[in-house]
View (cartoon, one colour):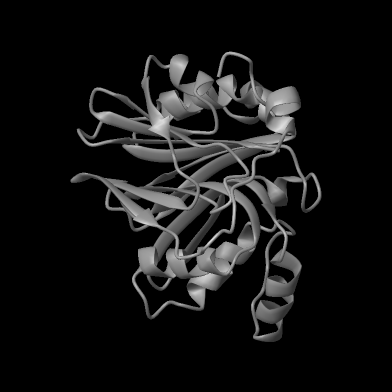
Length: 253
């Protein structure tokens, strides 16, 4: 499927090198494209670098080293919805009336086509053919709500698999679908907190695995610490994709 990675450092140190290395460790999860998104110092604007191919080709490590950002997310893509092109490379980013948002997604939203048709009938204009972009449009339709509430409301409407790393202003948010299809782990090293598709991405930067996110769990990371929330969807049972263990995941994760 894909690989996601996110980092937040509460002492203000740049995390872009960590995100680059985390994606390098997750390269086996996607070789089509790679990207990193980060927030401006005040969190008002989201910036990104994306490219086609492997991490070391798609992303300029020297350029990233010249940029300082205390929160960032990254993605390596193995497309399941939408074509393999730069327009569909993640993270998907946007600036809307309530601030900036960037989303890196591993999974497949099975009701995305229906949601997209509904949104387009109401005037939404999509910039890609990925299912992930529907999340941002659902948030924009709830622009009277705070961004975190709008994200929760958007996720409540989704069916299928998603493990997400999201930048909301100066916060890093991670979420796992209520069925637990795709993995997502939480890690830590000193003042920096990480989320990743697999623990091997924590090992490469010397971070410690804290735990797996529970199915249906959302965690919010900011300067005050970590807060755990529940996505308000009842799942009758938990599922996991067998291909994670026989095809996608690294054996040392």
